[in-house]
Length: 111
Length: 115
Image (tube, rainbow over all chains, first blue to last red; front, side, top):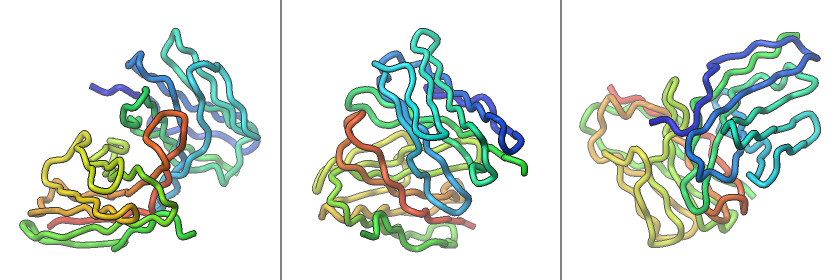
């Protein structure tokens, strides 16, 4: 049973436009959510996170939105740059539970 | 700081062979973990450790052993390699396992092929 779902395996956007990556979760015990970015042949790197007590967290061009009632979060990248092309993993955690990852979405930003 | 280091970067094994994937961190992190990444499967937790001498199973532990004799090192042992263990393996560490207190830092990965 997949607790964290990223239903779009891939996304392609034009440079300068907005990229929106979506993530859904099923476990209501999750109270902390993270996004990781992964380039080919490298390990994932932390991008941005949000606690369940918030509905928005912003860091430069990256904003994560959390809708607890819908069990949905999204990552917005504005404006998108070619260097943002990578695989993005959504992850969730509840209390002392282990981090659970989604399957990832491959973002391609075209110049 | 070197962060999280993994060796080797690439490895090819024959079915039935055993080997150890090395992982080390120099950040004095208590929590370390091993993940495997397969196409279309995301990152799945194999084993983790909350401190020296303490390990536990993750989502996909079968066929793997771990030990944690020091804070710095967390090796992953494949007892008898199988083609189903062909994957990319990532080691990660963090100060704590508790949500919201820290994020995990990942190593560069080991690409393993079992023939």
